[in-house]
Length: 222
Image (cartoon, rainbow, N blue to C red):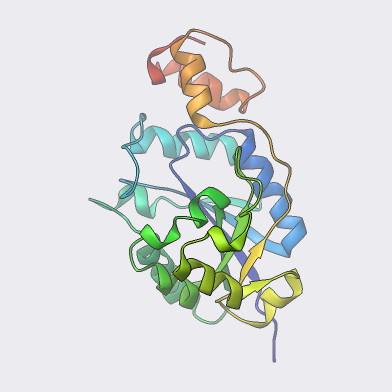
């Protein structure tokens, strides 16, 4: 049986993208052995407030942030898709495009995983990809499994693996918790700093900071 090359899918609003996102992606390339990481800015999220910056601005900021890393790519399918996008919809498209040539590894924060039963067709995720959980500020672990909703706990218990080597032998269906650096940076923090007229230096790439300033995003001055 041949091993599956692993391809990372990193979705999010990226409003704006920052070093917290980029550092997680960089570490996952090596720790999991990803061939590449695809950044997928969301269009109109179903379960959260509309992003502050437009679709075009958010895609442009991701493009600037990843331009020097040849293992990072930008995919604008959700940005260009009218209406609300769902993760399952995009993953189905990726699976159709890649066939059996790769295993998709969808990156999500622990804070998102503990509410994943609110996602559209959430159980279908396990037929389309592996889930790679990463820590987020305020969510460093899932804690006691008993506190998870029963339906999530059932999936987690049966699908959790502790070795990245398991991921390459199956095209989908596993849940793996990656241990990455936790940078205490959030997009909401950056937006608040900009709105207050404070510096955002060293929180995100300079090219992104310049783009924000040039386009007067987030109603503040850098």
